[in-house]
Length: 423
Image 1 (cartoon, helix red, strand yellow):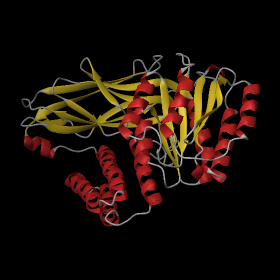
Image 2 (cartoon, helix red, strand yellow; image 1 turned 135 degrees about the vertical axis):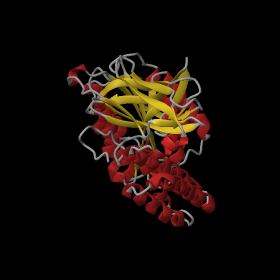
Image 3 (cartoon, helix red, strand yellow; image 1 turned 60 degrees about the horizontal axis):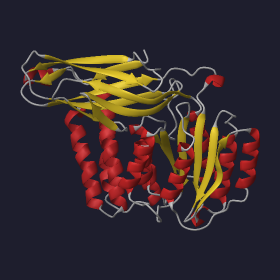
Image 4 (tube, rainbow, N blue to C red; image 1 turned 90 degrees about the horizontal axis):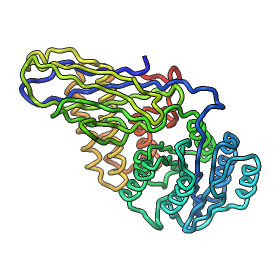
C-alpha cells in the first residue's frame, strides 16, 4: 500500500489530556513517460559576491550549464546573479537549444564581486518565474549563496514570509548554502516556508551534483502542492514533528508536503493531544492526501483510539518503531537549536537543550537498544555543545537533522522506495 498510518499506542487516558503519535508513510506513484511530464519554470539565482570568487563561481556556472541540458522547449528558465547589485543574465525564456547556447555564452562573462543582497537577488529570480507563471508549470527558484545576507532585507521572519507568499502563488524556493559562512537557519526557514528544499554544500566540488540533482527531481514531479489533511474530533490538538507548513480550515488540519517526486518515500510524524473523556469511548482521526491535479485523490487512512483508565494505559504495548521515529525527531529539534545557540556563545543554553531532550527520551526508552544508543550519543553531545564548535561542524550537524525531519537522504536528496535504509 502507498499510504500507511500507524500510532504508538491505541489507548488514551480518560482522566486527563494525553499525547499520542501518528506515523504516516507515503510512497508517491511512479511517473508516466518523460514526454508527458509537467513543464518546468525555473530561475537560477546565484551569489556573485567576492567570497564566491574562483572555484566556487566557476563550478556554479558549470552546474547551471549542465542543468540546462535537462530542459526542453516546453520549459522556461532565467538566470540571476547578485551581489550588492542584481544582474538578470538571462530573462525568463523558453528553453530552446538556441536560448541554452546563448545562456552558456553569457555565463562566461560573469565573475565575482561586491556584497550579498540575497533578498533582492532571490526576489528578482522569483519575479522572473512569476511573470510567466501558469497552472501547467512546476515553478521553482534555486538560490545558492556562501555568505550572510548583509544588504537589503536581512530579517529572517520577513524573508520567510516572502517565501510563504511566493509559494501561495505557485513559486517554490530551494536554497543551497556553500561552505561555513552562510546562515543555515535562514536558508532552512526560506526553503520550508517556500515549499522547496535546503541543501548544505560542504565542498565546492558538490555544487554541480546538488543543483543538477534538484533540477532532476523537479523534472520528475508527479504530485504538485501535495498536502496531508487530518479530520479529528473537536478538542484534539495536532502538531507536526516533521518539517512542513501547517494550517487549519473548516475543522480540518493540514500540512504542506510540497511537490512529490516519482516513487518518493516520505515519512510524516504528528503529535495528537487528546482531551479527557469517559473510559470506553472511541475516538477516530481520518488522514487524507490531496494535490493540485488529484493524483492522490482517494488516498486515505484512519486510526481509532479508545479511552481507558491509567492502569490499562500503563500496561499497553508500545510500537517501538514509532517511538524511535519520535525520539529522533525530538532529538533533531534540540540538536538544531543547540547548534544555533552554540554559534552565539550560549553554551549553557545549548547543553540544557540536549540534556532536556535526553531526559524526555529516557522516560520511555525502556530496554530498547536503539533508543539507548541515541541516549548515549546525546550524553556525549551535552559535553560537546558546551564548548566552542567549529562553524563547519555546526552546519554539518544542523543539516543532518534537517534531512531527518524532512525524510530525505543524508545528502538532502529525495528518498525513493527501495533506495534507502529506513530503519
